[in-house]
Amino acid sequence: MPVVHVNGINLGYDDHGTGEPVVMVTGTAAPGRIWRAHQVPALKAAGYRVVTVDNRGIPPTDLCEEGFTLDDMAADIAALITHLDAGPCRVVGFSLGGIIVQELLLARPDLVRQAVLIASCGRSDTLISAMTAADLALADSGITLPPRYAACIQALQNLSPDTLNDEEQLQDWLSVLELSPVSPAAVRGQLGLQRIGDRLSAYRKITVPCQVIGFRDDLVARPALVRELARHIPGAAYEEIPGCGHYGCLEKPDAVNEIITAFFTRS
Image (tube, rainbow, N blue to C red; front, side, top):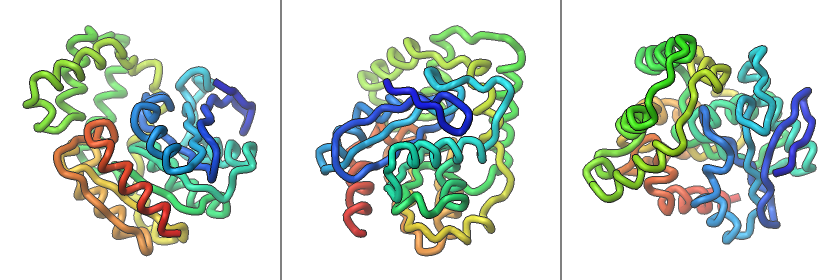
């Protein structure tokens, strides 16, 4: 994995394929490699060069234990696009990555040609604020949850009832989640950024064409919040995929990929 020094930090990224570039920004505690299973192959097959990023707090990118902001993370993506001489390019953001991209669209619209915002929002409501406070309390407690318990909690929070009711599929998910536990303390800096103020009025100033994607069974970025975001971005298109939760990019990857590639071909 290449590591480049930009914006005052060492930033890890992967570069796949050739063609017009697409930069993909993932969510809280997730490494850039989560895109490899489904989105990277689909976009490469469609003729794109795909750049995936490890955000601050995810090695080999610097942990930045002194703390950081959404503006810092948006500036990281801007600096990487500039370093790669890739702008203006297409950018995809999921969850916290979507919020990072939204801030990038305001700060450096010249670097982005089109943006896809997946399971993102424009404000933290009561539930998101409560969940974030709970995650921060766990991180600060020093308690490490048993991996099997943590896997069950992640499954309940992030998967759709369709997946939870499919015993064979669920067992596969639980095995993967148990083998790849997330330490809240290790990503504490990212956890705090999930709790954002109301940015909806600011997002009315976005001028870059946007496609917003929601997941009907998402308990984290619930569809009402994602639709609300789309309404506040001028000209944004919105599509909602049934039968998947917050991990919809992995539960229904073909549907996600079809929306992304169809949107990209419209410019």
